[in-house]
Length: 320
Ligand SMILES: NC(=O)c1ccc[n+]([C@@H]2O[C@H](COP(=O)([O-])OP(=O)(O)OC[C@H]3O[C@@H](n4cnc5c(N)ncnc54)[C@H](OP(=O)(O)O)[C@@H]3O)[C@@H](O)[C@H]2O)c1
Image 1 (cartoon, helix red, strand yellow):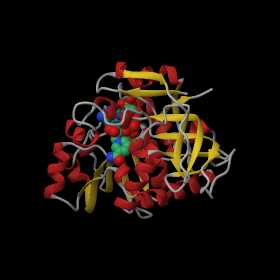
Image 2 (cartoon, protein in one colour; image 1 turned 135 degrees about the vertical axis):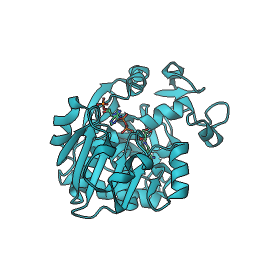
Image 3 (cartoon, protein in one colour; image 1 turned 90 degrees about the vertical axis):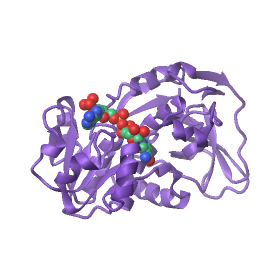
Image 4 (cartoon, protein in one colour; image 1 turned 180 degrees about the vertical axis):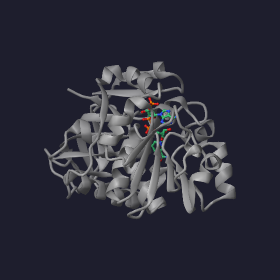
C-alpha cells in the first residue's frame, strides 16, 4: 500500500510517499481501508518538529514515528479474532492520536480506541477531520470551561478547523457566541450560528465593550493579558496553542488561563467526548466544513496550503 512518511524534520518537501506492506490486525484490532484522512496544523508541527522542546518526546534529532496523519474515515476490511464491536464492511471513523499513520491506504486500530461507526448522514470526507477541530474544541468548551446556557463565549479564529467547530458547539451548549475572523469569512461564520462576528483586521478584542465568560483563542494570536479587560470576574482565557507567554500566564493565573493538549487526555475521556460528538452529528446538529481536498500523492501541497494559515475549516486527503 501507499503511505505518507517523513524521516527528518523540515519543510513539506521532507514528506515521501512509499510502498509498505498492508498491516495485519492484532486480535483486538480492525484493519480499515482508508477513504479519507485529515491533514491538520498538528501534523505540520510534528513534521517540522516544533515547538522544539516537543522533540524530547517525539524524537530529538529525527522523528521516532515516521508515519503521518491522525484522523481517518474508511471501511473495515478485516477484524482480529477478539473484535466484538465491528464487522467487515462497517464504515468507521476516528483518530489514531500520536501513533499516526492515517495518510495512507490502510491502517489498524484497536476497537476500544477512538473509533466508531460513521453516521450514515455524513460522507467519509466530512467524517475524517472530526477528531481535529471538533474533539479539541469540545474538550475545551465542555471539560475545561464547562460552558453553561446563556454564557457569553468569544471564539477567536472562528473560521479555522477548531474555530468552526467551536462556534457550532458553543451554540449547542446554549451560549451566546461572538466569532472573530476576517471580513471574507464573516458570512460563513454567521452561517455556522454565531450571534455576532467581529473583523479582527478592524477591531482588537481588547477594545470591545462586552464582557465574556470565556475567550477561546483557537489560533494562538491572543493571550490573557490582551483579553483580561473583556473577561467577567469568573471568566477564563483558553487556547490550544502553547507558548512561553501562555505558560507564564498560566503559572500566575491558573484559574483564569487554560491550555490543554487534547491528544494526551486519557483515551476513555476522549472516547466519551467523541461518542457525544457522534450523537450530535447523527442528529444533524453539526457540520464539517471542507476547504480543500487532495490525493495522497498531493500531500506536500496540502501541507503547504495549511502553512499559509488561511484555510477555512478543514482539509482532507481522499483515496480513490
Ligand atoms: N492543544 C490541542 O489539543 C490542539 C489540537 C488541535 C490543534 N491545535 C492547534 O490549534 C491551532 C488552530 O488550528 P486550526 O486548524 O483551527 O487553525 P487554522 O485552521 O490553521 O486557522 C486558520 C484560520 O485562522 C484565521 N486567522 C488567521 N489569523 C487570525 C487572527 N489573527 N485572528 C483571527 N483569525 C485568524 C484564518 O482566517 P483569515 O484567513 O480570515 O485570517 C483561517 O481561517 C493550531 O496551532 C493547532 O496546532 C491544538
